[in-house]
Image (cartoon, rainbow, N blue to C red; front, side, top):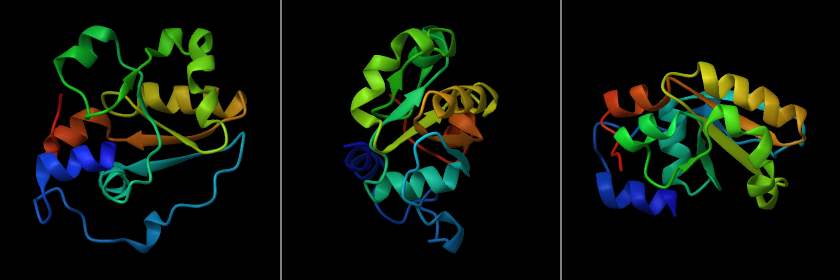
Amino acid sequence: MIGLLWTLACGAGTAVDPAPSATTALPDPVAGSSRTVQVPDLVQALQAGAVPILVDVRTPEEFAEGHVPGALNIPLGELDGRLQELQPHRSGEVWVICAVGGRSARASRALSAAGFHAVNVDGGTRGWIAQGGPTE
């Protein structure tokens, strides 16, 4: 669904449409692991429909100011208490984003420790917006 939102909002061939990259191949998820990607990798994965869930760990106020379409807001301070919401995604990947990458890196480590395969988006929502990504 996020990929569809991206396609509808941006269309093909926009400035944020990255060239395919050999470094962005999506590995099979491994429980208890994490990796870090950059904003262009998120764009590519969204377009490919390869992001089953994107969790924005910023505060509700930050989230309300603008977020990647389709993202779920679970503030970093609430993550431990809301892990049950992510259980349906335990066998796949849980992509995590914040403003620039610090909080999402911490959240990714916590998710990894809880047995999830986390993908941290370095550059965050600010990078997304800087590259012309749409927001809700």
